[in-house]
Image 1: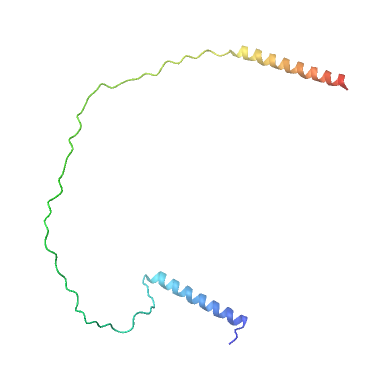
Image 2 (image 1 turned 60 degrees about the vertical axis):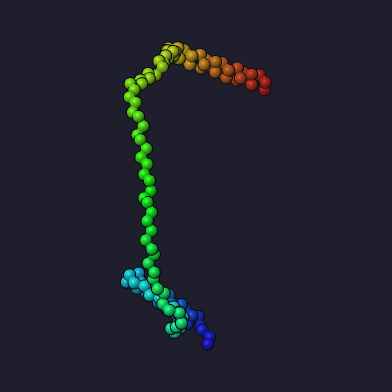
Length: 123
C-alpha cells in the first residue's frame, strides 16, 4: 500500500491528536493505566508456602550515657581597647593651592609659547 502525501499527513495528524488526547486525559484524571505483557498462565510449584518464624527475643542493655560536666564559669572584667590617636597635618590653604595653580598655568603658557616659536623658527 502506497501512502500519498495527503494520507501521510492525515495519519501523522491523527497520531498527534490521539497522543494529545491521552496526555490531556491522564493529566486531568489523576489516574494512570498501562498495557503490559506478563507471564502467561498460573505457576504451580511443589514447594510448600513459606512459613513465618518469629525470632527469639534478645535482650541488650541500653547504651551507656555519659554527660560531660559543664566547663567552669570564669568572670572577668570587660576589656576596653581605645584606638590609637590619629593626628593629621593641616594641608595647604586655598590661597596656597590657588597660587600653585596659577604658577602651573604660567609654566604651561611659557612651554606652549616656546614650542610655537621654536616650530616657526624651524620651518
